[in-house]
Figure 1 (spheres, rainbow, N blue to C red):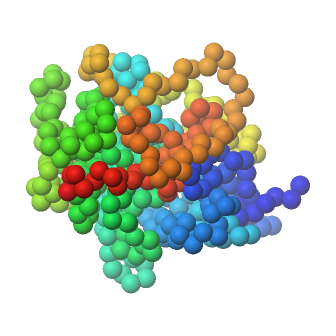
Figure 2 (figure 1 turned 120 degrees about the vertical axis):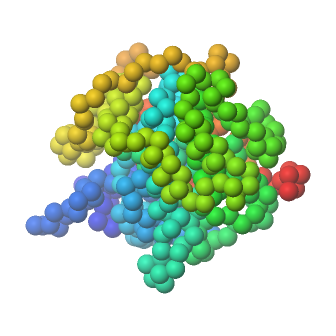
Figure 3 (figure 1 turned 60 degrees about the vertical axis):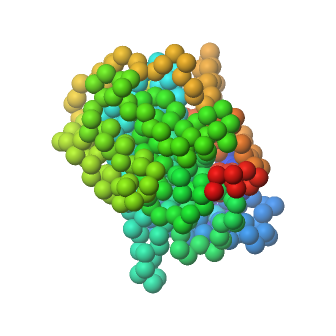
Length: 427
C-alpha cells in the first residue's frame, strides 16, 4: 500500500480535530541512507479540513498560526517542526506531546479530593511564565523587529504537563502578533471568558501583561482548587472580572505562603501598570519562591503526582504508539531521570464540599479495551458559550484512549469566543 505523504511525513491514523483542522499521527519517511531528524521521527500533523482549503480567510488564519509557531523555540512552548502544502492540503507538523493538560490534572485532583501541592502549582506557573516571556519578546527572523506576540488564551486547558514532568504552553491559534494577516473584528473577543483580562473585555490594545493576568487567574485556581471569576452566566463572569475581587487564599487555606500570594496578587492587578511588567518578572519571583528545589526534584514530584492521578497511562500510551508507528515502545516511555526524592506528601484537601468545577471526569472503564484514537469532536460554532462547562478541554487537547495520548493542537476557530450582543454593556 502506498503511503500518503505530507512533506516528509507519512499520514497515519486520524487522532482528533477541531472546527478548522483534523489531526493525524505522522511518521517521518527517510530516504535510503537517511536518518530522521532528531525529534521528528513521530509528529502530530494538523491538516486544514478539505472543505476549508479554498477559503482564503481560513487559509490566512492557518498560515498566521504556522508562521508564529515556527519561530517559537523554547522548552516551555510547544515545538513546531514545519508546515507546508501538498496535494492541495495545508499542514503543520508539531512535536508529539505525551501527557495531560493542566485542566485534566485539576479535574482529576478534584475528583480524588486531593489538592495540587502548592510548590507544584507554583512550578507549573513558573514554567509557563518562562514560555510566555519567550513569546512576548520574540524577534522576527526577517526584519529583526519584535513580533509583539500575545497568546490571548492562557488557561488550564492550554497548559500541557508531560508524563516526563515537562510543562509547555500550547495552542497559539488565537495569538495576536504584529505580522498576522488576519485582524480581530471589533466586538469579537478571543479567549475563554473566565480567563480574560480586563483589557480584553474593554477591547483595549493588548500586550504581554494581558497574558500575565490570565496566568495569575490560572495560578490562583490551581493553588486553591477553586474557580476565581467563573459564574453561572457569561455576563456575571465578565462583571466579576471587571469588579476584580481576588480572595486572599491565606484567609481560607492554613499556611498558604505569603510570597506565593504576593505573586498572585501582583499578577491580578486590575490596573495593568500595577501588574508585573513582564512574564519574565513573574517567573523570577516564582523562581525565588521555589528556591533550590525548582528543577529535578519538582519535576520528579510532578511526574509522580500525575502518575497517581492517571495510573498506568504512560505505559498504555507507549504500547499504542508502538503499535501505530512500528517504533520500539521504549522510545515513547518518559526518559526524564527521576531524582531520589520522597513521594508526594498527602495533604488535607483544601477543596470545599460545594466546589464549583467545569465537569465531572468520566468514570474509568471496567475493562481496558484495545487503545484506538478517539473520533473527531466538531466544534465550529462562532458563539461558543462558556456558561456550559468551562474551560472546555476539547478540542484544546486531542486524546486517544480517553486522553492517554494527548496532542496539543487546537483548531483556531474552535477556541473562538464571540461576545457581540452584550459587550457594549461593559465598555
